[in-house]
Length: 169
Image (cartoon, rainbow, N blue to C red; front, top):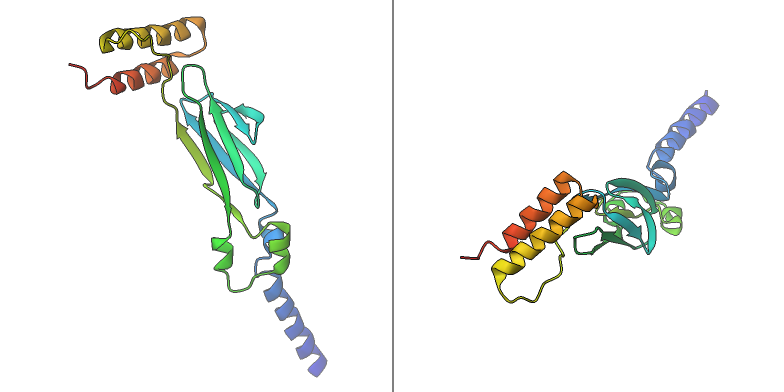
């Protein structure tokens, strides 16, 4: 009778340990993150390598820092970072050293990155703010006509330009 009790105890112990959450097994060494921009369709580069147009989902190593660059015609280029954090893993009761060694003990923050692109239409140097406003809207119209912007992107760009000149009177 003792061997079966010992076997059952060992089985229960093994099951408990195997479900404590070895991060390499439960989470993996890579994490899926989402990258978005407003307006959509910005060229996205991660650490200098072009990966596509927003919105997109990509898997990145959990233990590295990633610089994300956004570029879109008519808008200022933006950059942001995915940073590794081990705070949620460190809060666990049981942790495995191999998780730290293999990078699975970290998670990238933020899990979903979203940037709001701002207009970047060159100044004319006219000095008159009304003339500058008109020139920027005309350049936005030219991007629409050339097909570099769609209707929604054009509307977003013009709204941003107008909000930047709201103090005009």
